[in-house]
Image (cartoon, rainbow over all chains, first blue to last red; front, side, top):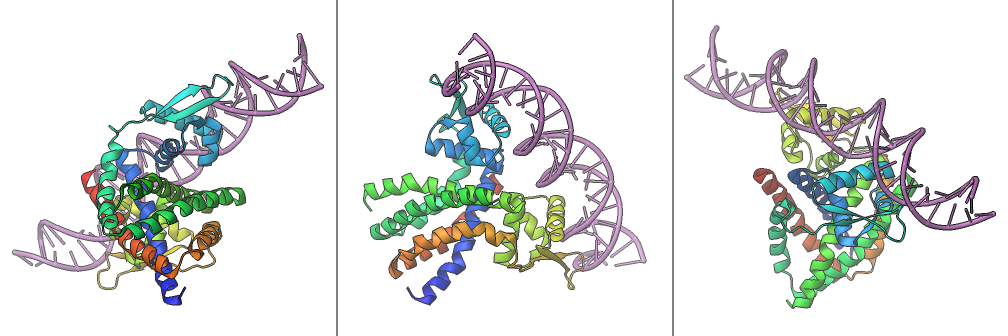
Length: 151
Length: 151
DNA sequence: AACATTATCTGCATTCATGCAGATATTAGA
DNA sequence: TCTAATATCTGCATGAATGCAGATAATGTT
């Protein structure tokens, strides 16, 4: 690929990521949750129920801090604790699906504006973007693990 | 565009955004900064010097909290205060360019893995992605403003 | 010149997330 | 059965980010 292409990509990409994270922080603030809390809910929603320990690993918190995190989220009715019948030491945590969540209204502006962006894309372009997202998402997760191991 | 396309996009996109924000949080933790602090530096880096008040608006903090934020970042040598000669009440803040920053090493894993993802894309696909990023970034910024006004 | 407005900073207080170390409950192994 | 290992929880303490209200300094206005 040619250099001008890469230059243009290199110029916008960090700004793009910056904008997404800032939007994530603003969203958390809007719903009155800490960033970690909000994105823990997201993790549980997208990846399904998991043990408290697994959630601790995902978030990078200690198990004690994770207990408290689950406490906060449970109190808000965002997640639910289920004791694992197979191993009663373990606690499975799962997101409560709540479309009633104020989160929806906080995400609405982004949804609307992004809908416009995607609406102007051809089917082929949508496919290209989707392919990219499908590869980039796990890449970020791997990077997170690497960062945690290194640090 | 066809429904299957949109379904696939709708399935991956929230996970993709979740991954990016989680990566942002992990990065902040790795460099020992709060999320707000790290992304304030990013904002200053990408958008250039601005007044303390403008930074307060961008971050959604009060001016008092912003003063403290700048204090923290200045103490770390990440930003610099410059009194505006035209209006000496004002304080311009700018990012100190420091390639030496440990931030670079924290971002390295993501950079490497994303480089692989982008390397497999054709020039046309890169162009599609770049176009998208260029439109999505401002969309997120607009969404942030809308959220703040609403909340 | 006097006053109002604006921009940033400070003192004080509060909230909250988090770590750490030890406690408890459960399971696995010898 | 006794002991070790594992998973989560609790008590305690701490640090850190933030808001708020008032202080300070500079500018604009009449």
